[in-house]
Length: 411
Image 1 (cartoon, rainbow, N blue to C red):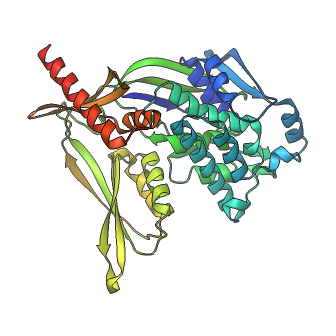
Image 2: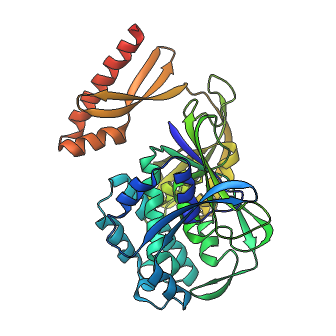
Image 3: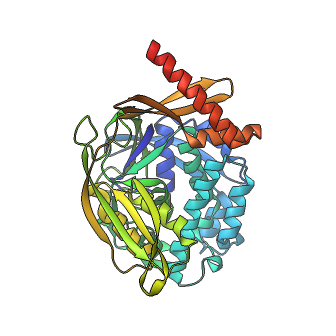
């Protein structure tokens, strides 16, 4: 499994994330070709090698001259008042792969939710200012594309540092971090450092809290390292580092030995008064906070009312963040939690090239021998490409995987 780990010792912004990915091996030319599918014009992308406190990094900037001028004059251009629906329409019109579109839209939906809480209005009424500009759209779509183009299966992120003082935005002078950024960081690990300035921007916070699990970097074989530079000068290197590589054994976090045994927290709560549409969002937030599994069970509550038990498993170092999300994003007023011991089989991911296309298989070592199971997303993509029934494509992929595993055993 290919993973990307962001070390945010100096914070994060949209252009720092993009710069780090390009510096780690993402083709800037290929990225720009894909981004040109967005129905927005007038932007250019430039990259410059810089040194920040002795650390070499890539400064990547998305420049929109007219928009930057209007934003500097107070943000009174039509571009500064795009609503969530307008931005989502722009992203969807690009015709990106489904996974890219889903990620980019999820990031913008989180931004809309944060702004709605800050301004205390319905999300559909929010008019984006800085984060509605073309450069922010390109940054967010670029981050989703970059992770997809680098074949990243999972993203990890360190705790996020926050500066002090004040910042200037479309709404005037605001405390640092700005209110929207603080809302985006709700439920995620962050800390304050004694530096005046904005270390984590709303765009950077939205991207990382949507796509990442927060916590320690898992055991991995490093394949690439990239440094993305920020614009500001601080007493430390203002760079964001991304480390890309392959995990030694999938879900190795929390394991204390080769047998996969380790401690994990189970967290649960009972709910009987929440709109069921919220559960999809809740699951996304809990996975982003570091849960390794989330599920629900039907329950009969007091007074005979139907209810739902929401349960999650989380590594010990991420349990508090998962609890915070569960309390913030549901109607529950309390949770139950305890430590459990787990044993998991050693797993690895392999790529199979077949006559119906390339797809990944998950290899699990069991007492009865190895098992191979095709990755669902890969098989679904093949079914969509061919216009075939998913159940038929899955059966064929399972057959191919079993034959591949048998051939590997004979070798």
